[in-house]
Length: 294
Image (cartoon, rainbow, N blue to C red; front, top):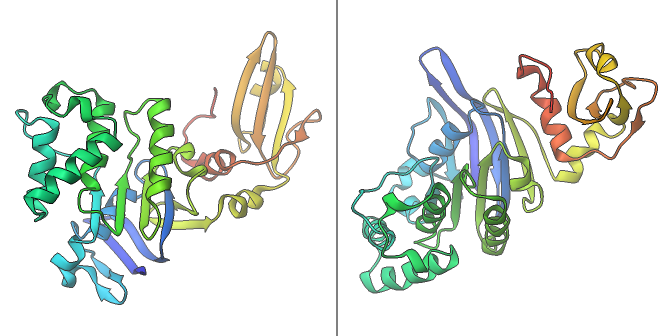
């Protein structure tokens, strides 16, 4: 199975949200990383056939996804950033309703609903009204509905929004277990969501993929450019503003600093092993109005 984006472009009036994207995806987990406004959601919607490209196209094994129609939708599972539901629906009602919309047989829909509510730790809340759910519970329900038709292509837009750290870890393990014989796309701005489970990371900025590769391949691009040292508030204030401060931790009068810079930022700095967050923050550093302070 091969999902291809060919010069995929979407323009809204004077704004180009997605700009001539070319990419080919096969079975595996892909992490689409980008700051808010990078174009990720618009790209997801074009991959799902919800939004029509201004130019270019999406192809599945050589066939245009829009022209495939129902054949394409039958293979697709999608979790948008926000999904609608009737306030009167229970979790089970909602799942069965979505199953009917997807054309699943009632007997299969009931069986699949039970399995997925168990998988997402919602079986004990199957008869509760969704309006009483926490944000994390609603998000888990959204993940469950995306899996109803056992999709070959699973597209999840900011899937861990509202989940606590324990739920996020469970989610990552669940998605990792579901990835066999599927194309799984996770769109997020949270590095940890994809760092340990994605086979390939694609970094999106201003509507384009500017970098892609494995975590190791990407972090190697800033090898020798990540630094750590202890400094003072005054030294930190005088630091060159072009240097990306990844983290600063106050310890009494001293500050433990981590930064990305092609040159040694200060005399006491020593090189550190780069990670994906270092790369991500350095890529988007120019979009921050003020120097980062943590």
